[in-house]
Image (cartoon, rainbow, N blue to C red; front, side, top):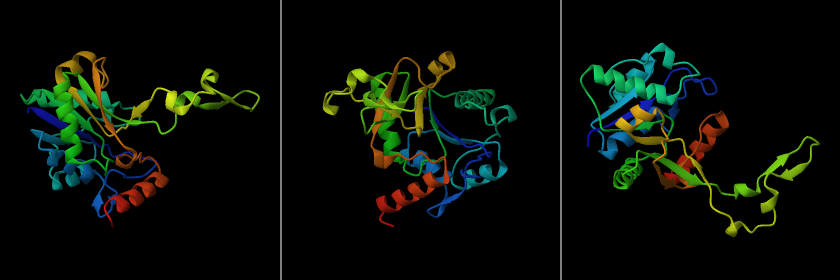
Length: 230
């Protein structure tokens, strides 16, 4: 299993300052991502890509490797995940270390577990796909989405589905935004996390939570306490 886990954690979060190392239920937030990767037992290397010395120190304390700091050009608000991964793979190649597969893991994933990663990896390998993305089903049919028109009235975005029964509409899914598996050779060729041959790993609402605002953070804490009987 020649795989690398790349946890992306720059230091410049603005909506929740220092959120990648902010204490969440007794531990720095990034510790959950690191622990999940280590617990999965599918990675030869678990590393954190960061531009921040404090994040680097905490990441290493919890068992991750930080062999180099992220470049300045990939550390601002406009940096793309794919460019961060490309940089990581290139830096390891300079050290004569190459990998078959990678898993990009975002740092604010307190509900991620080693079991989830291992199950997703097993499906990824069995599928023969170039990549895998975790998804969750929309709780309401998006075909019946509403919009506000120029006259400030509500109307259906797709009026042909306005009278359709929910159970008759095709289920739709969205990206969970927790992790992505990818084949290194395919990624280097296509330069995208979602190539044409991307398979999926289905998750449920209890396993996911966007954490972009303080309200999101509070909801995640509440959900975490309920799930862990705290």
